[in-house]
Image (cartoon, rainbow, N blue to C red; front, side):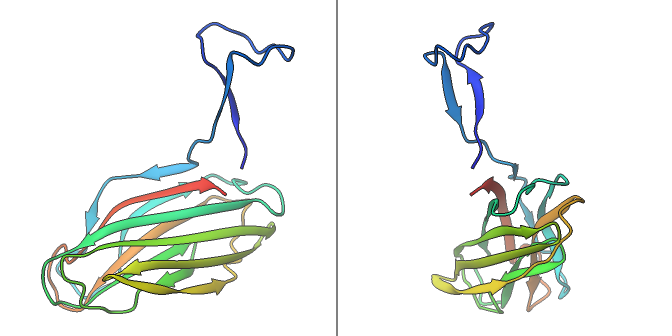
Length: 171
């Protein structure tokens, strides 16, 4: 990934002959830690999202790592979590009766061209691995792209599935 050069002392300027006051910082592209749960419905619902600016992936071969995490309610209701890059579904947990469990979904999205990407995604849900899934999202990167998690209940109960966070970093 890329790095930002940040002086460790305020007021310093960057001197290419002296690197003693410079550190490398790998910062997230976007992060959202505002928790959101499913409503008391059976409809797939957006839970948490980040909007990536146009050209976040500006060169072929650049990649993003997307990581989302959350919890499930303490009941035997079926719950489904899905991770998207733009309109493209990267990975789904399928409907599982996760009872008071933590979960995580992760994806790696690699730019092939302005409107073509390769992605591989996987996760852990209900204490079991979510099988790796290769997709080609093919989102237009010259425009903003939304990375998001959705949730869907098998029983109309609020907060059966809660997304606690979503972070996108350069890979």
